[in-house]
Length: 156
Image (cartoon, rainbow, N blue to C red; front, side, top):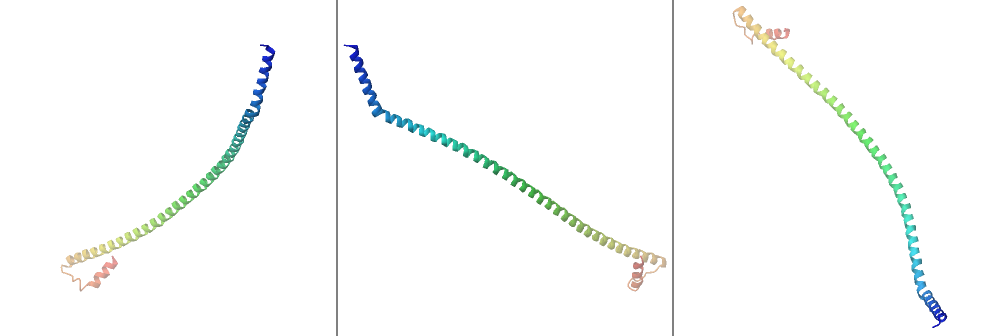
């Protein structure tokens, strides 16, 4: 065999196979490559959108956290004010109640002192009458001399 003919036949076979590959195999391969490139481009674009959305979401979250902190501080301040008001009211109520209790106790003490004075006057009058009886050596009728006894009690 002549090497030139073999080379020509091999060249023709190569071009025939290349032509068949380019006609039937190349378009699906190119289509698959282009589809893959489109998917990669879409994925990159989606990743960029996701990064942007994440940045926007982070900004919104930071803003919401700031607002929540401001609201929480306002709530704490309001709670402190209410607590102070409640404490002040309780203090005022306690002072008023203490004053009432003090007045009641003072009135009760005055009443007890008055009763004790009256009892003491009655006992002193009884002792004075008993002493006068012993001095006079006779009995004094309490009913007959009621005015005299009342006058003596009032003087004591």
